[in-house]
Image (cartoon, rainbow over all chains, first blue to last red; front, top):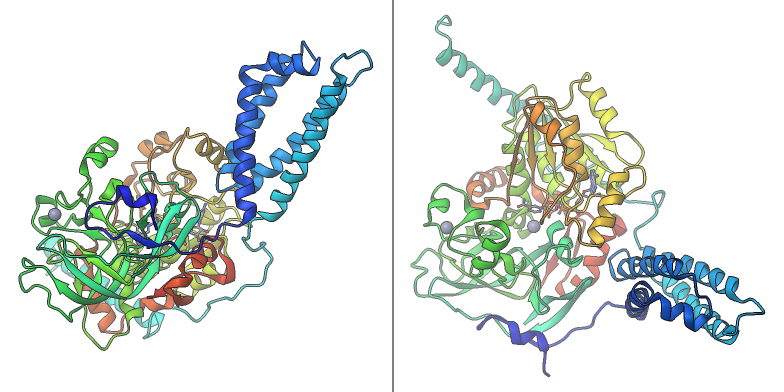
Length: 188
Length: 391
Ligand SMILES: NC(=O)c1ccc[n+]([C@@H]2O[C@H](COP(=O)([O-])OP(=O)(O)OC[C@H]3O[C@@H](n4cnc5c(N)ncnc54)[C@H](O)[C@@H]3O)[C@@H](O)[C@H]2O)c1
Ligand SMILES: [Zn+2]
Ligand SMILES: [Zn+2]
């Protein structure tokens, strides 16, 4: 089987012959997809806010759209990092803000009402994916009050810690004695 | 052979790869009998240290039996010898090696131009640790090629189990060097941040070197219990104020010696707002490390004291309190460990039964379970402190 990574191997170093299983879960892939989607949408909102507001018949809200763009990009970066769970929850919250902003544009006199309805539907769908990915990528670090095995007998000192302390004290006393002898003429 | 291979962030797999071959007359090949996962490997697992490529074999704490030697190894190693492999690859001949500064060997980094760009000067080649340090395949595998094998080894006698010797490769000398850098005096209080495997070794080393009081700081009860067993007074930074407690325990003067065994991924929590800010900056690549522990050490250390940094930092750290550092006359010593500088002495201490580093092992599993154990060790699940893998 062809493994792309083998191309950059230094000559003579081991190359992959057969790949083993990856521990990545479908939720991790979903998180990744959502992360990139978030960054993509954010870039559009940040750099082409007019196109967004025109499509939605919400001209005049470009600054808000830009702010949302920054939010999308940050949440996207977070969703791609090791703290993806926080990123996904940030996205869930962001979906709520998106929906609220869209609803505010859903006035009877907006000629692009149908686009807004479509956008709301999309936000709803994405929000469901965000929520599911957030649920499925919960950090697995045990909670603070979880039961733990304790290791009160693992001193690492086969002869006991007191014998180590005594030995160290003797060495120090010895060294100190020598120092005084060498450094202080008054000591006979 | 089977090996644990890096494929990307949080993606390590047990792949089948080609066996290593002798590439240079100074090489040797060992059949790995035991290897371990290190806290440094977690930085790579998280892709926080740049310079990993998909297909890189992980691992730098390895021991085994020599099965093949190159023509220039010159009788210094023979087939059948049992060796522990130091994580720093050394030539034994350059100016730095001669001074015992093995982790900055001038010869062994085969991709030195990368390191020179980033760090100004190159450091030694390291096993399984990014292309900045040579991109050498690591030892979480069935076989390992040891470059410069005539110098890069620690010969160990038969009769002592792997578990007692394996950590001569890294964490035991690392904890030891961290303590040695403190020039401990019998009246000293030594405070140690981080009770992972490196912190545990630093605690034992400080006790062996005769510190008056050793204080260990972490938030994980299982690790704190192990620290206490080794003779430390403990502080849980999630439930107590580290600065207040340290001052209490030192009559308000602060510890003379401070050791960082936590490194660039300090725990992020809202009660330490700097860690949240660091994490945010890290995400948008405005900062590479989260140096909370360094800041705390500088703040709490007794004036005139020493700060010893064993924890790994990768690039840029912000908001370092240089005012306190300078005005308090502090000294900072740091470095990847000069493993072979210490191992003769440490091996003797193990042989004489003064210390048994195997106390730190909580999990021993077959190599194929390595990928799962990366997760367990990272998530601090199942009271995990140190994982040993058996190929
Ligand atoms: N200098 C070297 O040559 C060398 C060699 C080996 C490892 N290391 C480094 O040493 C560090 C520790 O390694 P390890 O194997 O023990 O890893 P580890 O991840 O198991 O241990 C780190 C410990 O630090 C604790 N910690 C996090 N934030 C803290 C804080 N604010 N205060 C106190 N403790 C905190 C964590 O709870 C954890 O127990 C890593 O950075 C590793 O890369 C350096
Ligand atoms: Zn290590
Ligand atoms: Zn050298």
